[in-house]
Image 1 (cartoon, rainbow, N blue to C red):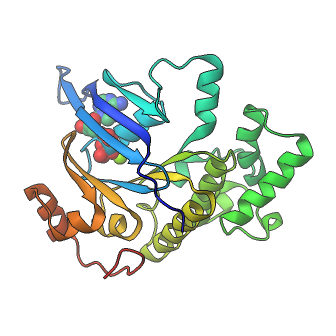
Image 2: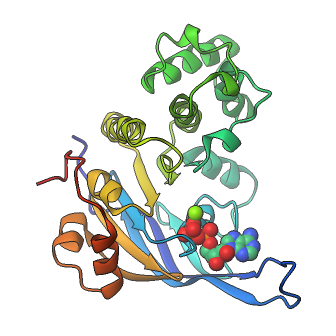
Length: 276
Ligand SMILES: Nc1ncnc2c1ncn2[C@@H]1O[C@H](COP(=O)(O)OP(=O)(O)O)[C@@H](O)[C@H]1O
Ligand SMILES: [Mg+2]
């Protein structure tokens, strides 16, 4: 097991994010949506930190801000003590290597025109990592490390020739090939069957233990969070209503919303590291 250190790798300080509501056929006027409201939290090095909340609560927005796909309207985010808001040039490139995101829908997140081999090669080429031969070796290693083995069975295939679970493994391999410090996994299994989901959870735990990578795991599913996460934050309408160790939140929820999420779970049947 990797030791979780009480040393923050990611810090959010008073983060707010506003959107203009999406124009719709029925609504003529555009309103402001507060996607995140004054969020402050710390994620420790080596942990799997869960962000749990219903659809529309602001989870994906938080993930996108942390990997800098978007910028906050207020507040600051730090990675390893360094503010990421205004990163430029080399500092931004370094950041893009250190922080990766795995998206909800493996059917949309992979480029259908790239072979599996090229899908994983691409970030190495973009960042100019290693020589051509070394990159090839890294692709093979990376595929095998996510259970796509032997790698040669997969390299020349295309995303549509794989199952949903295999595609998400490819997305994980692509995220991991740059040896990131921090990975946001945004509901990575919500499109997959429960048995496939559990295999992927085991893979994420294994990756955390082998590489010491820190995860933000985003989910609407408290049972999934319980299976995977060391600590949780519960988010409702853009605000964190409570946070703490997974066991404490599930055993002694302080907030009505958390109690409702717990009651809405069919049963904690996954077993696993955090099960009783
Ligand atoms: N690009 C966008 N434009 C307008 N509104 C958005 C955009 N992205 C998210 N929102 C709104 O922000 C809120 C939070 O969305 P999101 O972060 O996707 O929630 P979750 O991932 O928890 O389902 C929702 O009300 C959503 O409609
Ligand atoms: Mg989302």
